[in-house]
Image (tube, rainbow, N blue to C red; front, side):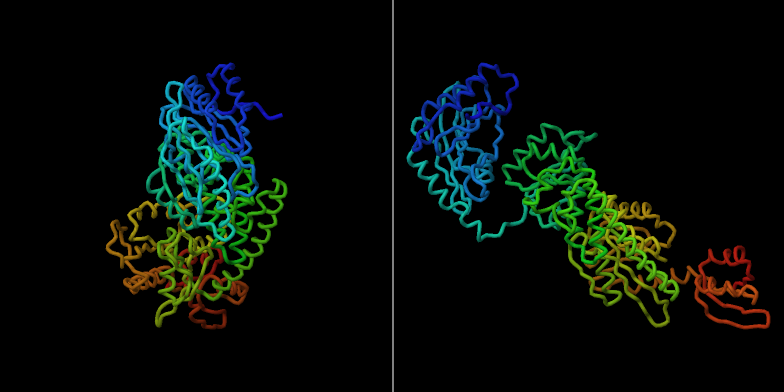
Length: 586
């Protein structure tokens, strides 16, 4: 027996009226009849009683399989399929009323026709309980909308419209087997600022999505259930339908409950800024360590949000938020996820030991390290390539570099140093990424000099600089000398500037000589030349001294050895007080 339940917005409707609406399930249409006059009049009459839209879903056999009540402006249009192949027609047609008497189909109606592959979409204008005009649309080849002008309700061309359903069924979905799906259509939703929303758009494009719309709703306090207000979510649902969106991306982190609630209403995949950034990292990670770090960050972030994952966790859905080394791991239970995270942490610890050995070799060889740090896409990799002749991947994209890359810089008569390119920073940098990439980011923490690279072509440069300084504070990289650089000056004078910054262009080479001289001056300021006397009875300290600085000369005497060496100023006190050795400044 067919279900008799009426769904939708039933609040305030008398039980007797709901029972009358339930009788629609008993209505029968002939197989060659698109819509009977009796059914049309009944839908208009009931619309006049409740002053709300009513939708019914009719199979090709003429059975009504769903009755839905909406508001005075819209009704929820459901994905009701009688076929498993999502590219073919669903096998049902949707007929719904417009209480304002307008029989024209809306943009939302037409986008639902495409998105849900209805056999047909029909709107009945209803005024004072009587039907007025009716308009119907069908899908053609390539999902083209086929639609005539509205007709009087009593002049429905049943034979023509039923024939069109069969013709549409013949062509729709046939070409899908030979056609690659285009990029995901993304709608952005922000709650902070236009600048942050614009950056979210760049992130979405970097991930491979096509941004079709962006909306902003500033709120003093986020809604605990939906992030934004319920009314705004319902409006966003209609906008997503009209724009045929595949995914809605929120500019702030969503809880698992918020993501689930939003997906239930919006009927599209919902992800947040952190998931988007993790997806970009998953696409860009190339080294073994980078892939492990991304997977660990994904699992760490998603493990606390499994309750809220719906469309995002579907393996069949694919797209943004489901890529990366850890994508199939997200469906594990928490116990298995924890085990996998422990395994990843152990493997990363082994790689960190190897990184530590390489770091010790640099210290032993007395080669200082200069780290390039800055906002993502600020021009760090271009600068590295220009100064060292390297061929690091460069692209006008966010997070083009994920792995720390170091190259030696040598000039005649100058101090040789290692120039290291690091992963770019960004506002709202996910803490899961900071933790997972801590070993890579330590290249900045342990560097002798930090070169802060700022994008001079960005109107938001100073805010980006604040983000960089904040992340450096979080990492504990606060003691090294800093050189500030404004890049991309070949694109014009920067709108904003920073005191004592070096203006450069990594593309043309402008300002690089001044930058190199600033680095050399800074390196020279970091060391002092001293003479240390090492008695024979304290010769076990020889190895310790050699690790602390560069030995320039050795003079052997009958009592011991005078070592002439370069050290950082703080080591002078260490040698004198902790090692209790005699020191002379040169």
